[in-house]
Image 1 (spheres, helix red, strand yellow):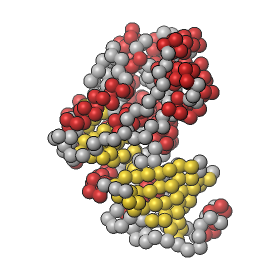
Image 2 (tube, helix red, strand yellow; image 1 turned 60 degrees about the vertical axis):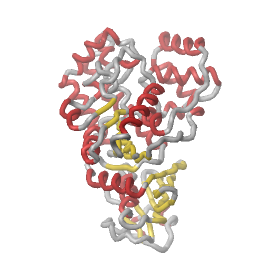
Image 3 (tube, helix red, strand yellow; image 1 turned 180 degrees about the vertical axis):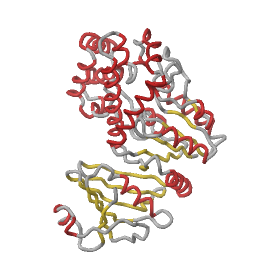
Image 4 (cartoon, helix red, strand yellow; image 1 turned 60 degrees about the horizontal axis):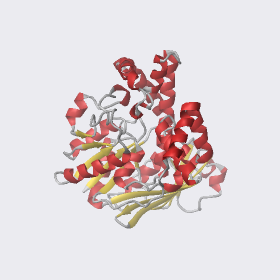
Length: 405
């Protein structure tokens, strides 16, 4: 049983690619988008439209009401029960969404946190009512900078939860998020969509404009009387609620939606970089995605990348055997990747593809290897064209390639 886990930041193109995968494998899609569960929120959550829902069967879209307090723990239980049923009919199922915690809950299980006394949580909630969201954000930044870099800072529910754990235990919330992966009856295949950051931010801005043309203002106005509900404490609605309350002008509210959406995307990318099991793809690379998922199923492949400050150690595994390996070093937005081991044909392309996708944000990127590179059409870089630190790093043997943009 194979669970293809497709993720990436907001506006990266997950819906379209998930449908292509579902049609390719004649299977269904399980959503792990924590905002698309709620049937009252449609335009602001970028749900699949009627045509997309008809193109592939979706689960956990419009499955709950905003009146329901729905937790990630409940989702884990219900999603695993659903998958157990779906895998009796399908060898492959697609799980997709940008909510990293919900993906983690399904694929690994949730971490165990200490019990928080009600009085402690009530105290944090009182601070929120008295001082606002900015106070919670600054308090979390001081108490737990690691979680601050990952969490949705515009979601007060998550900030209150993290600060409550910190105040009751004396330990950062992130300290409890170290649980080993739980046993699952399926083999996950992790795919992450990758855009250059500037391009992604422009897509986000354009999507907000399209949402407004589609009626986001009217949708948010209809939800304004219920603005206190947890499900509505989210980007795209809170900014318009402030406009309806005459705290901001409409133009300012729209700019805040775009800004906060970009910030949310940045936090999503931070979250996904923490986990080294993602195989990266540009959304336009359907042939490569299909080829990789077919190979991953046939050969039981998995990816691993360990990050250490400005270095990363990438490995491709076939079951428990490492069949490819590279080391990547990044300095001042210039990277050098040294490929030590390449997988045999027909899998060798996977190594070169991952190396290239990792360099999308680099000002200059090079790869050095003495492995066969018959599949590459990258230009060979002359030694004098390398940055000084690379010239003293690479070995005299092998060839160095300039990685194309």
